[in-house]
Image 1 (spheres, protein in one colour):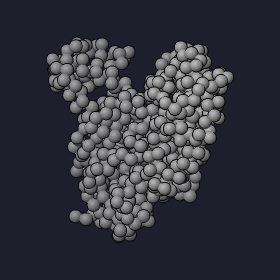
Image 2: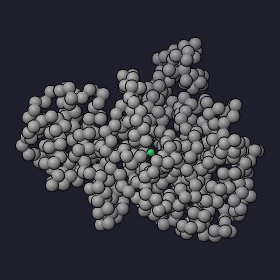
Image 3: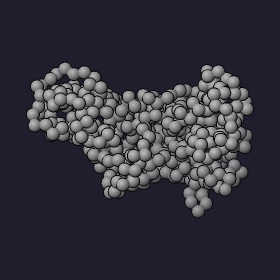
Length: 512
Ligand SMILES: [Zn+2]
């Protein structure tokens, strides 16, 4: 355990780091240092310091270790404590907003978001060392590249934490993970600490919204725009206007919204928000399969995108015409039923929905509308346009905005489970069907995959060959998942029905 003098030194190092990396002003130095001393129950500071070692391993980790060893906190409170400590050295929200505006006015808005991103990493709000643990690869699929990530950065809760979580009383504050009231919140076992979160107020569609980085960073500079008001997601004309306002404000980012219905939407439907970022997602790179013109809006091109699922793309420099056309696609799609391909807009509930994504490409608005439908039936209790059950061992959760654009975030459990699948292919694990079909066996969900792969490839593969076989299987499963989400399938009947929607539904004229 560190001696008191060593803790004092580390606290001075932390302040010096914050001045260099977190825009902490020297006027605030003593104020912040005294708060840190109070946090560690110390009555005096050590000597001032300007030199320090590695932020995480030489400053943060030893201080958190000390907090555990000296009995200040329990082991499972490490992250909460670390965030509290780093929240103290992060400038107040107003100071961050002021600096953001100042960078934006001098160097432009891209420099300002870059600055905020660096700050978010430097105070561990975005934990890059954890995110870098993710396993990532690219697959060249039949309609273009697919990016696949096995997400290892979200730590799984251990049984002790789960037990504690159940005891935690529900306060309803903050109302959700996206409410602005999260800024500075201490958190608890059921809610992450957010003392290091800083948000930037923005105006979208004449309303108060905010910008923050996602702590999970599923891709480069993954940002979230969220309403100041806690209200449900809604994909409507106003949302389309706000998305276009967003790319006018931040032309270097794309922005999109999850569909506002379960199964086809994201995990948070209770707070109106959009997701964006700097990364060029796979769907952006693919061209058009068929193009159409509009007589009402002559300055735009509308097309069917050559992609796995069903995407209508609107392109044009005329913002108003792009917007009008997008609103028309939404209103027509909401009521579009074509039973010949199983598309039923509504039963007692609304089923047709849209996942919209907007970006600027050389001053041209590119507005992608992914047509979705969340209907279920007896044969497809999880959704007709949802991954079929044979694919649930790879991904069972809703297929949201990030996946439909070709970036898969697969559950962390797959790392271990796919290694075990390889054991059957190399003969390390004998194929015992009875054992494999036992529901108690965590590998039972992969039984279909294992039997198929062993049938096709035998059980005497080298480790390298087994790696390739399992990788190919996951790649192909991701392609199938994308195709499952398509409302108009990539076959003759599906494409004829898509064309009918474009011409009869939207009144467009095919360009061929
Ligand atoms: Zn909320």
